[in-house]
Length: 129
Image 1 (cartoon, rainbow, N blue to C red):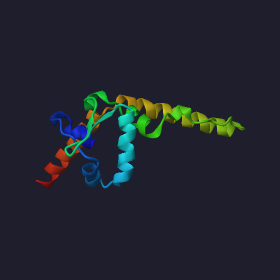
Image 2 (cartoon, one colour):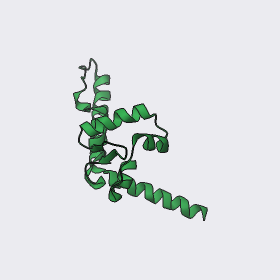
Image 3 (tube, rainbow, N blue to C red):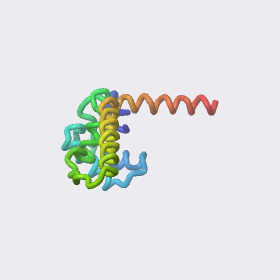
Image 4 (cartoon, one colour):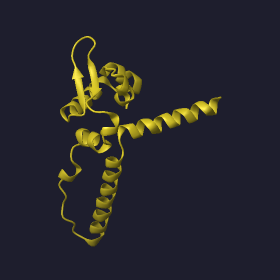
């Protein structure tokens, strides 16, 4: 979201800056950024003024893509065959939850998250006036 927020200005952010803003350990964030870069969602620029930027506009990046880069393909997880009808019912529920989760992630972009964030910030600002 940090990178999506500065995308329009073309600003490049460094890992240390994002980590400080979000309270994330730098080493962990660097691993995440590397996975997102390898997945084609980020570009990195080297040098003293280097850092990361989105490879596409925030409205063109689905959350499903981000999650896939960070967590892998959920369908690739091995599923053991169920031994009882109770487990079959639970497995069916888990499958339905995963389908709905994926549909929501595919329907939501980084731009959608920015819009929601901005609405919350505006509501907070109005509350304090």
